[in-house]
Length: 427
Ligand SMILES: *Cc1c(COP(=O)(O)O)cnc(C)c1O
Image (spheres, rainbow, N blue to C red):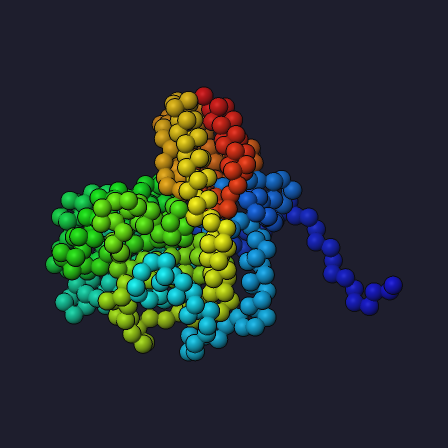
């Protein structure tokens, strides 16, 4: 049959260099990118533009919690976008109310605000803390060294790492950093101007360091004693990655007084939309109305589309018991990695983490990695790319595994086998 509308020109198969060229000419070079260009994915796998397949143990930095091209997420996007994509926050929409209800049920009595990213969620918590302390002239927020809280101006001020601040001084006022998991250091840092404390339950960018139960309970007590807000950044360690909705819930399991502990605010993003951009923060009940009408807003926050996807992600996690999967498969991977650490002490120093949030720390000064200028972590990640596995560096010495929550045991085995072969070659 004769075609009436000419078909579009066939897409020329791009190679990595051609895609990179587009970036070099047109995209601001603020990221250090790997020499990989991806075209599509399915489940725990990704394919690059040359057709090579990778096992994705990073899931877009803990974002694609149900894997790539998940058909149920696709269906939720299609269904909701046929009905309603956006109306603004001048009006009510049911999906936003229902997602807020679901998050409140998972955390505790309080309310939620929706935004678009982790940094924006933390910005909301900073504004909450300022509003909370305003009448008494308190505004300061104490955070931890090695923390990461996003790349906005207040986010880099809150982040306890010099590298994110460099060149962007002067910093937003009112942030100070103390060593993580050090309750005494926190107590000593509190000043008459302090309004809040903000920590991650498991430091992610800082190299996968979980808070101790004593630290979490101690901070809660300290905040009660000094009338401070206890804020937790759950952007990376939240959303069932540790085997419970929030990492503090997992860390405090079975600990005396742990079940009753609640922070006053929690930021969320990354896995919340399984790849669709959405962020949120939850505020505990006594403070849930502090941000009253007109005090905080964002155009795209909590659209019907984003919230429908967020609800679908939660539904699938519950139905398929992915929280349990994160525990079981995560424990298995960590146990196997600890075995590798014992087996290859000249290459690996430690394996740590909770659930599917795992850090593999390299031994210092590995001779096989001495020739290149790049940090050891980047060199390991590059070698894993060559072998067909994606992981994510954290600092100079750690490679992170943040796989989808539905990672199969067989996929874990495949990844571990490849990892071991790459580690072996570094002896
Ligand atoms: C990624 C991350 C952020 C920032 O989230 P964005 O969506 O990139 O703004 C904040 N805190 C933690 C702990 C993160 O891992």
